[in-house]
Length: 463
View 1 (tube, helix red, strand yellow):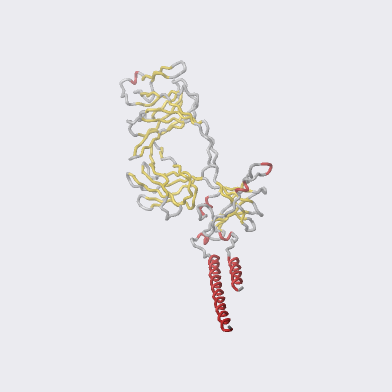
View 2: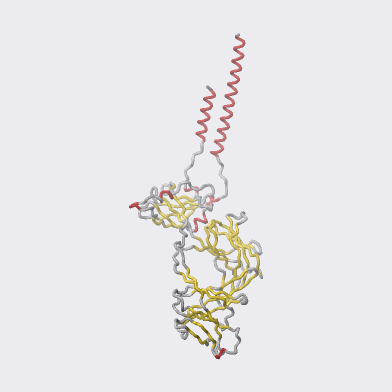
């Protein structure tokens, strides 16, 4: 009987000591973000500002909650923006081209052209004033677009293998009759080689000329490159279904002679990076990596040529780099090869799309976002399933209304950001109760066995 009583006492103690999920309170978060809503809608949505990323301690934003005016947590979900791009159809065509020679007297081009009835050029001959000049001194090219029905968005130039490295500013002109020429645009073209890398500046963006002929002419009278091929590209559709990228520029911190670090202050979902060298006329082979924290070795993100070249008052820089989106806070830039050390630390521009926070308007407002805690795990209840239900009037889903964020403020204090491990009192109490129960059962068993031995001896004496 005593064993049964001890067992029941142990079960009761275990139930009493079982962990209970404590209610999350706003004071457990370092910062708050007020929200302004109107219209009495069921769901609201906002684009997370940079301050939330820089205040959250988890890269998955798990230390974030939405509260109502009573201090109760309301369900929420984080959504990535729709990054799907509408298909872009690009028609490609190779354009016939003809080298031109400059006259002695100036920059005008003297040419004799033979055309078919349809206007297609079949022959181009230099004028008499060009005879006797250096045949290699080309001043430009004539492009025949008379057979095209599409408008031109870009010209893509391909140089011959024997062409020497160069950078040159060219003027693109357009004409209907090969007599009257109108300037269309200017562009910097050319190519450079640095160690194992080659830089091609070979695309010219055009404002969609509706002309039959194009002329490429060098501003300095000498077209340094030798063309091997000219390709025309036409973009038939350019609709993009995604929000505008946010931009964040940070100056790197020098860790060593050739290594730099950038702290974004938070785990931003970066999708592209632009490495900007601050030294004029500089080239360097660089490697880019990122990590969640300063102690991680880092993940390789990109390796290539970064450059900053001045040409006729214009600056030519390397384009932005597309990277796989990862929520990393720290980025490292390693200069692997460079003719001279960089005198000025580089700058990096990060492009990213913020998450969208959707929450259910339970209770009464005003509502606010609380974020920044080292002790909280992500919530297990989200509003995704509710959003997928049929909305009013037979709609396939609810469409959240817009919530306008206010100015961030300090909520529970910055001590919630300290890297401390809370003492698990509930876990300790549970193990203590279990140990006490084992001792109690052992004592009861020992007592019962001792009593049974005593009763046995007593029966023997009676006999």
